[in-house]
Image 1 (cartoon, helix red, strand yellow):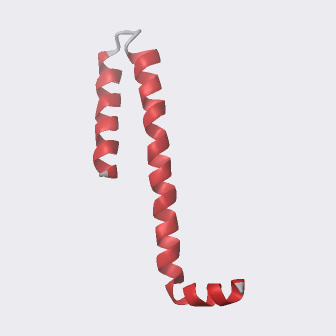
Image 2: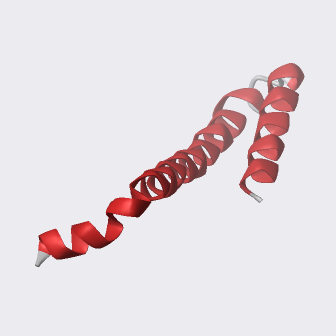
Length: 68
């Protein structure tokens, strides 16, 4: 039965791989945001590092706009 289902998807193998790849990329981008927020709260704000804070804020905005 698995072979019959796999045979149905065979013509769409490239598209299926692309969709799975995009899902992995989207999940990865979703995981980056909490780590950036951690750096903002634990490093940039306590050390009054305005340059790092601005850089991290720009990266978060770019990631949010990319996901949309």
